[in-house]
Length: 275
Image (cartoon, rainbow, N blue to C red; front, top):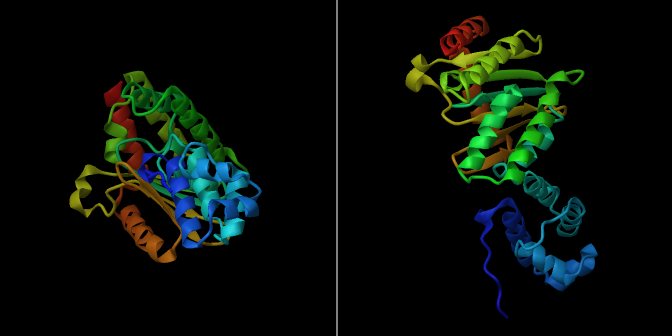
């Protein structure tokens, strides 16, 4: 019997299929047996495993039930649904919507929650022009971002702690007008009572405790989860032992970064230079 080789690194959908096959084989189940227990056809199971057909939320939940996998496949499905984003970010977005507290650190670009529509569109358009994503994915990114930004006006809103590397406010995105409006938006957001905004200046040098984007969520059950990124991959982490070092590094970053008042003053200075 020829078994089609899988390429899980190709996309979240392919990764879902590869994880489905791996878990099925580890449990010693055939596709027919999984089909019988989930209510789907063997052909459907095969199509999802090989990435020819995307999973649905119902399918993912059925697999979690049959495999006794907790929410593993439901979480993987969230990555498939947010296919224009890095793996793991779909899971993060689902939990971000429930968070009481959000801590984020970004390098190079303003954090999504704080982006203006024009700034976000410039980023999506640039990715589209590079061929990194298609038009549907660009539209999906902007739609997901607009939904996330509603968190800041939710009642009650989550507490947001944002530390921006100085490169975030100095890297020109779009026209001078677009960049000036983005910087003005940051100044405005910093006045909100539930937002703390800081800049990690270049002068921190090697003392900056984080080098890549990190997002930390304080959830209603008092747990803290983390999402971090490399150039090509994202990772959503729930294990306290893995989250703790990131949280510690974030606290160090907050202590060493500019105060909010000094940060706002720097943002205003950069805005004047842009104009």
